[in-house]
Length: 481
Ligand code: ASP
Ligand code: MG
Image (cartoon, rainbow, N blue to C red; front, side, top):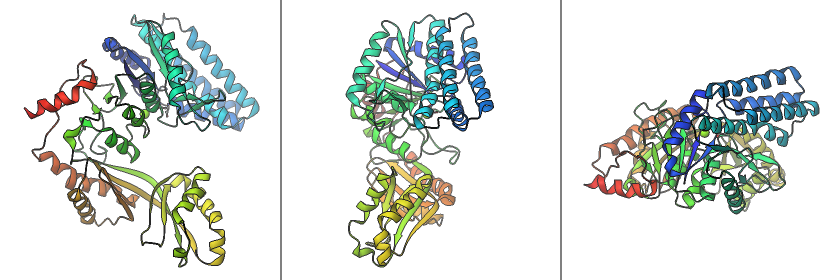
């Protein structure tokens, strides 16, 4: 079984949906299960609609709804004017009724917004199933979430497995087309897996169904050694380990949802990132077999929009459990820390958070340390915006990579404010304004030199229809000969 997920641009119009369906049919013998995103821009449009409803803006609601309906009706017509679109039309009516209800109640709750936003994927699924039907392949468009979560929207493996197995059985001999992004909570409410979460739904589904492979189709050729808008010479990475792929997404590469690699990695299911618009390109294979990459620096990423919050005061060494208390205070408010550091041991503990959460973090910490501030142990809590994370990612990075990365930064007069050094990622916190220079310099000085080394290279080859899980070793062996 092969889970194939298509992103928003891939299903952005009727014509594109037909193209996607042809790709699916080309892999018919691998028992595809299709996961779709909303058509490009639709999730944003639905969020706007939810906002207008909450504000009681009837005129805006009406326009936004009409535009959404047109977009899907146009796509349906382009796919096939003759096909039976009853199901799609019924769903468009449900969406309209929900929007009217939210408007009447001026309901600005997360539940109301999630319910509306869920329709992006739920409307895309019948379009994809309709296109498969127009090409002669029967397909079941599923309209309900297949991912089960707990009350905090964290996915549950076993509950998802039984939901997924039941749904797949309903598709009978046809193909299942499932909506990405949405999930069901224990109280029955629909929630989402966060922006870009369709990737995550696809890998959760692949893991639940114990699929042989999971392919994520997007609008670029795969994972790259750097953002090509910053580094022109950036290259596609033919094979990376799940650890590298996960770190790449977490530290700023936009191609995959940061959590999407974990579910398939845990089960050893190979994953591939591919380009819908170049379906013959093998893309990037993400698999645990990629030992050919050992010791090599592979990619450099940038993640913007961070802020540092620091405690300052001469009495800090007297304040026990510093980080634990900082984390606890922030966790209570749902704030995630990206990194933490003591620039001077015992002094000035810093946590780096998403800039959007910085004010909330500051407020929590001010409350947590109220008594230390009153006693003068802590003189102030500072906040510094405009920071970014620059991360060099590789497998088993050693002292040489570290020295080269630090030299590359020094050559550009970039002074990191903090760093964390691990065997597969070297992360530097720096000013946003220095980020692009840092990325270019690290790419040039650390990554590109490894391209010219006579190290083992993994050829892309042609993936054809061979099962993914046999490929890497074979290719690895072939590249030696
Ligand atoms: N449609 C959702 C979004 O735009 C999820 C996804 O496409 O992955 O964020
Ligand atoms: Mg995406």
